[in-house]
Length: 501
Image (cartoon, rainbow, N blue to C red):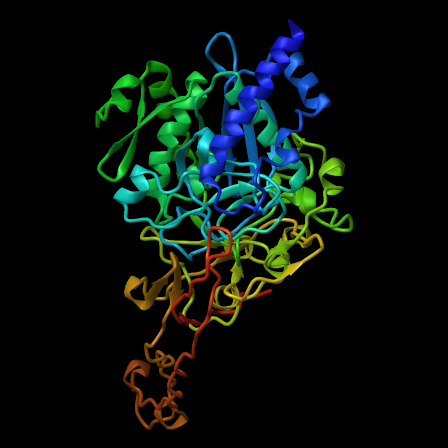
């Protein structure tokens, strides 16, 4: 009986892998499935499944989070509800937070995708991979373009989620066993960050917030019910729910548990805003990387995950030993992300004429203490001008800073028309003439033979030089989806005020 079951399993695997070759877009030229695609699930992972009452053949669901650089694999139990099997650190993702909009923008996709056996690639040039299926119906309705957005091995990304060879081998094997067990497709949910009340409050003024609120509806459904949400489309938005959502209803039934979670989160968001939580945007030079892949010397790298006391759901030492292969653009990882405070319309709150950015803590609480000081970071315009360098791939691990630098900026007149929007990032363009200094009375005006009011004294004000024109720089960028080439338009460099120490 055991031999017969093993034979059936191998035949099913061969059929599955043969079907997957039809979707190969980064194949290595091998005529049949690679031996690596047939590797069994690691014994320690099988033991983990058993400890959680799971079987290798149980259906799966995968969630990815860019900002936290984590990917979760969930398994469906006999009760129909999903339970978390394992969380994996993402070795590299590229671009910024936000959806992919066009081919060549280096953006990793955000949304809900259906992974079929035909999207599994056993002969990937990136060890193993599966295609996310971008663009889906909602992406197409929004005019988003691109192709071959993968979850794959190595540590190089041009719009994909790179997981290292060892990690993708395990994820691939888990998915393969679920397909062999009868699952016809699994859902891949991709988010900019975890859909918590804290994050939604922080990013409330980001231009992508409407799209992210839509994604949160699907996240709320899954987290409240631990069931895979049925995904439909209504115009340019997702709809989530049961059979009515799948049938295309624009107002599907909302389960009470989901409605309760949504209401609870909305109340928490309102409270956080009322307490003064700053609205921010996060700017990356080119995506991010989980801190477990940092050099051993960078002992504070985990602070960005919530503090040095954070208990990680994975062994840092284990992943620190992984072979990363070609790391894409390691110099952009060393700089790290910057959190920029923004106004209600999403524009950076920036002091006109500033030379350097001001840390949020310094702006909010005066001179910061030693432990509150942030490391020096390049100005926002400089950061964005430098992020379009050609890919640099090296056999090394790139450093990641302790936590994102936060920059508070304030527009002197609150005029959003003084900003230029480029690639979803906003830059100041201050062409206004400098304001004259307050009038100063002359000595002659103060010493007079009869009483004269100071307000009527003669005044002389020295003229100030006109503001310098801004320089315009151009930059080029690589493409997305496993290295397709593209180009970006010129960037406008602004000026910012240096904060007091």
